[in-house]
Amino acid sequence: MIPVAEEQPPPGDAVFSQTETITRFDGRKLDIAFAVEPVVDLVRSAVAGYRIDPLLTDAADGEPLAAAERMGLLASDMERVDLATLDRALLRLEARADHGGDPPSLIVSISFLSASNQRARGKLMERPGPSREAVRRSVIWALTDVPDGAPAGRLAEITALLRPFGRAVFAETRVNGAPMKLARTAGIAGLLMQPAGAALSMTDSALWLLQAGRLAQRSAPALIAANLAAEDLFAMAGEAGFTHATVRPGAGRAAA
Image 1 (cartoon, rainbow, N blue to C red):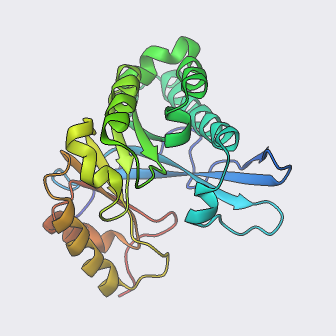
Image 2 (image 1 turned 120 degrees about the vertical axis):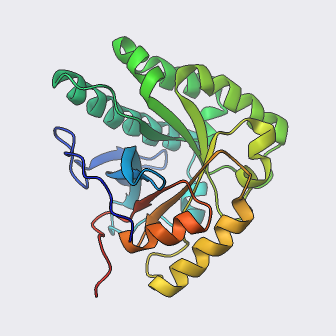
């Protein structure tokens, strides 16, 4: 496996930070836990930054929201999720500033619904207040839940609107999803992909990496294999063409 240079965890960070509960438009409760995942540069074998990943669960039964359920959330629901995620990123930036460190690179998700809505996008971009410059130097916005029918021109417009408020704009995508097909024309600087299903074997994960890496090559300058089952897959990810990788929260090396 690739030996990764260790970095001290940022002050106040944990694998999962505190859970926040929001009320959806229909009155149901939604729990949000934030996974703070080190993003490993596969060339330098070092931590390049962190991804703050909101994990959504139904508060009534504790079950994670499936992709279809997440896509079914209203714009107002996703705005609350995006604001909560940005607030967690701001806490991370403030903690590092309080300890005299340079702002880290942070990948922060923002839903396509919020990014494409002028009011919601404006609220998110105004949220940092005095920390706006730190956000501009540190945050990489990652568009999520981009629908397959998203027009190339609209995706390019949203990317251009977000770019002045951060370091870059990435997008989460499934294999052959809209962001993968449109990344170059839309000006998206990086793609995040992760295997479908949390229980893939090491062999299936390796096969997925090879397929996804082959299809995504030359789509964007940065290709991140996210939520891998173990660090042992980093070498395979690099061979498959990925530039960075993260592991599933709580995962480490595969059992011998």
